[in-house]
Amino acid sequence: MLGFSILILLPLFTALFCYFVKNLRLQYNVSLVVSLVHLFVTLMVFLGIYHIQLPTFFSFDSLSKIFLMILSNVYFWVVFVSYAYLKRPVTTKATEGQRYYFLLLNFYLASNSAAMLSSHFGMYWVTAETTTLSVAPLIYYYRNEEALEAMWKYLFLVSVGIAFAFIGILFLTLSANGTSLEGKQLFFWEFIRNAKELNPIWLKASFIFIFVGLSTKIGTAPMHSGDVDATSNAPSPIAALMSGSLRLTALIGVMRIFQIITQTSSFEFARTILIIGGLLSLFTAFVFMFKVNNYKRMLAYSSVEHLGMITLGIATGGIAFIGAMYHAIYNSITKIVLFLSAGNIHSKFKSREVDKVRNVMNILPKTGWLFLIAYLAISGIPPFGIFFSEIKIFEGILFSDKPYVLALVMIFMLFIFINMGKIIFTMLYKKTSDDSNEVANEKFDIIHLAAILLLILLVTIAITSPDIIYQNILTVGKDFGITL
Image 1 (cartoon, rainbow, N blue to C red):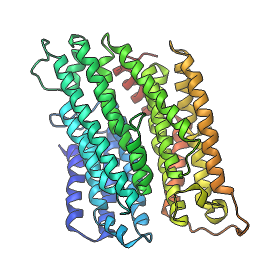
Image 2: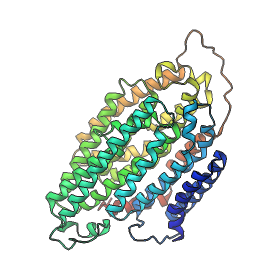
Image 3: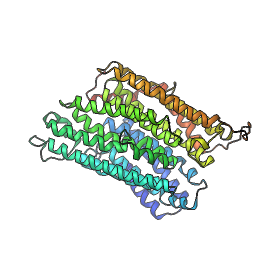
Image 4: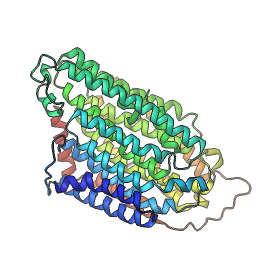
């Protein structure tokens, strides 16, 4: 129970602590220690050094190990930079948002860890919903009309999506009627073990409702709008948290039902739906990159694109599935750097509109370079990890039974790369006649430090390709019936 207490109960008690203790610095220090302990324990579990005994409704498998590792890593860096971010001058209304910031962050960690470790569909559904409730007030941090609208839109759409997922779970229960699973608890492993007994009609209906419902949290098209608005209006650390970890919380729910369906005659049906969802997400990002004039919104659409790629890799299977798991890791790290750099730019120019940002390379040279490098990383330029994960996904698609999908993927990604680059280079290098050519001396702060360390981590994982990550991903693949 010690491990369970550290991963779930400790953040919960820390949230309670932050409610009673009003000193922001103290809240930060305690939250940072908790995030570090959470990361350390998660790393020990991931490396196989520490084995945790979990209570009923929770368990570890290779998939939850990888996704929990991603969550813990993203969460640590978000907390690490949060105090510096909160100390920046904001409007009087926005200072009210600081009061519950660390309380909600700790509640998010507890609920998201519980969702990742759930071994029961009912428990997963409840904990996934609590992640929504914890993150929604953080979207409203700036206390302006845009943030309020984004928060309510996110709450409404994700709640509708969660209701869809609940109906999907009910359909899954109906699929077990007349089988050895009838009347039993909704444990994942029970359904995986007896998948071939399930009624294919109800199973297909269950998959459709769970996939469509959770897509509102994953941010894949056509259910992406609430997530895009929320990500683009939230404070940068929260946007990084949502893009780097919250989307995977929903993805793991889809992967659980997909893991059941892979052993049944409905596999091709589910696979086709995932491929359509992945392609639709890439197409949506491709279209909106032509007209987007808000750089945080641009990053949100980049998340739609990359979650689409991950979905496509999972559906394709084989080496593409392995690439999709690597892509989830690399995308989470890169998105932290992109959103933190965007936050620095927003703090300086007080606008998220591309037209109002100029000459970043001279005005904020350190941030400008980090933003540029992170753009190259997310675009799949070597030696950054996304280059290698995308190669695996492309190879998987090329040698699959649907190689023509690769042509569409390449076209969409080429134009996304060009249009995103056009926006970023405009922000970095465009000057007016009043702008000086002199390079300002931007103060080096904790956000720059975090971004540099994360980029080093990104390259190190990509180049060294640690065996422990590869073996864990291979085990996940085997759980989905994939052999290389």
